[in-house]
Structure formats: structure tokens, C-alpha cells
Image (cartoon, rainbow, N blue to C red; front, side):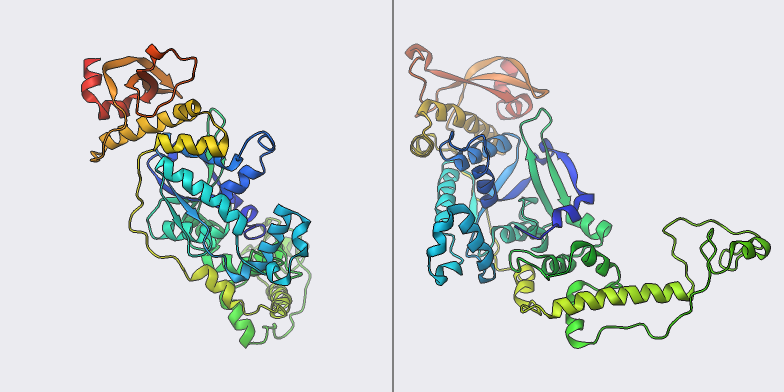
Length: 462
């Protein structure tokens, strides 16, 4: 769920960037959200066996071939604070039969059945050689931790809680099917400087508007109220204000200023005729006056008093409703977001794809024929070989191009490529209709610049 209305609040700093701009970056992925997305794709429901595995395979393949290094994050133990939210999700996923369970089951934070799905995904990631880690608590918290610690270059998640957990860069809404694939990018630095939303203010918003740990938020406090309140806090955060509210009485403007007639042109005290004859003191004119914009605020005593009175009235209203919450002063919620449970990760171990294990897994779990899996894994094997050679990694080769067998130049997505002929790798399976005499070689299309670095002598002889 995340924070209610958060994505619409940070919409002004959303930036659509080309998917290829992620090339070379290491990104942490909240796996559970990818799984949930796949389970709700209408086009795959009832037609695809294990849509979450199919979706994961092709996303991993596409992003890997774009040069994006992925690190997946599995859910850990959910905070007890989340029990109400998780009970509702369980009811939505598995139907009303769960209602008959005991009260103990209604407050559990066990992910049971969903964790079994995640373990399937982890098994496939192992066979593809893609690293994954398990969070101490929420996956988006671990993603944010890795990002804030500089261990990755950003997070891929649809959960806005990542900002509250300290993420620096968040990516969401992949569009991978068009000729110009894009993804939405949000920079925390822009959220802070342009929207004036610090991490502490975002946590305060989560409490007021509602999040996984306080689903209904503060009854009677809406988005516009909360944002207007933050504009009146004079440099303080909402969390600081919560502390003051507990200790102090609300500020009430003292004294009353008398309202006087205002000019309808410059919107300062005095009539338009008086300003035309003798000028306006606040405009600095001797005759006539300067028209002001519609949203101009007059600095006279009455307007200053009225502005202060309205701000105090707004704060008093929000304060009263907030103090009435049974969870006030929200210490557990604040600590959940601001105090990290996760530990440093020294290294993300990347391995080579295992075509044999992937064939068996895909056949059992997704009903893929072995020749289909071989074809899909082949491009990951050749890409891994090229990258290993580019960076001088001392690992055994799984596949080798046939000497002097660049077949011809190609262009793919406006990028210069080579069509390359390789020796058939071990355990590769061809379709039954493929003649035996044609099974000694396989072909792929590889980016020219990468192949040139990995096999300069073959390119030279070509």
C-alpha cells in the first residue's frame, strides 16, 4: 500500500528516463512487488503457468542484456505493526474462507503462502546466476538501505515507503514493450529541495494520511490539510511538531487587528481614489498605485493577524485529531522508518547461468519445453561470456564462438551488432525437427562494441 497519495504528491519531480540510461547501474529490486504485478496481469491469467516466474525471467533477461545489474531483495519478517494490513491482503488474495480462522491468525505477520512463491523466484534467480538477499524486515527497507549506503545505484519498487526508509533514487512504472522503453525516476534530493519534503516530513505525512502501519491515518486529516500545515511550520518537521504538541498548548494569536478598507488595485489599505490622489505608502507611490497579482498577500496588520489565526486554527484542528489517536506519539512507526534493521552486505555474488538446472526448473514449474528454455538462456550465456572477458574475470567459459565465424553485421534497436556463430554449449537442446547435422552450432546477435572488446582477434580477422 505505502503512504496514501504519496505518488501524486511527488508527481512534480517525476522524470521519465530512457530504460537504456540504466545501463551500467546496479539496482536493488523489491521482488514481492514484481510478483504481485504479474499475478494481476489479465492477459496471463488462466493462460500462463506461474505468471510470476515468466514475468521475472523476461524482465531479468531484458534488463541484464541492457547492462543493468540486478540485486533482488526478499521479504524478511514483517513488523507486528503491519498485522492489520496483512490480514486484509490475505483476505483479498485467498478469499473469505480465511475469515473463519482464529483471532490469532488474523493478527499474524507470517507471509506463509506468499513466501513459498518468493522461494520459487529465488530458485530461478540462482539458476540464472542473479544475486538476491533477504531483508531483516520489509524488502523496500532493505532496498533503501542498500541505496543509502551506496551499495547500489537505486531501487526498483512501486512502494513509496522506500523514500521514508532513506532511498536516494527510486524507479517505477517500467514500459518495456515500446520502441522507446522508459521508466519513471524519482530523486530524493529533488523531493527535498523542490517540494520541501524532508524524510522526517514524509514520515509525518505517512502518519497523518495513512500507511501500512496506521492504515486509516488520522481520521479527518486529508492531503491538502497536511500539506498546508507543513507550510506553516517555519523550518520544523512534522515529527518535531508532534513532540511539541504533546508538551505544549496550541499557539493562539494574541490581540485583534481591525480590518480597514483596501484598494482593489494594489490590495493595500486605503481606497483606490485616495491612492490616485495621494499615492500608496506600501506601494511607495506619490500618485496612483501598482496593481498586484491575485495571489499577492498584503503585509498590513490585519492580514498578518488573519494569516496567523488561520494557520493556528489549522494546526489546532490537526493537533486535536492527532492527539486523539491511540497510537500517539507513534514511536514504533517512526522507529520502523528511521532506524534500520538491516546489516551491510559485503558482496553480491554473480554466477553464470546454469542451462541444465534452468531447463529442469522451467519444465516443471512453467511447462516450458527444454529447447525453448535453451533458446532463451543462450543469450544470457553469451552475454555473460562477453562481460567476463571484458572485465578479465577468471571463470571457465561456457560457450565459445567458432573461429572466424562472424556471419554478418546487424543493427538492433539502432545499435551496431554482429550475428555470431557459436559452438553449441553443453546441455543445449534443439527442437526435434532440427536436423542432427545442424546441431553443432548456435547463432546470436551481439552488440558490436562489446564483442570487439571480448574477442578482438575474431573481429580483426573478420
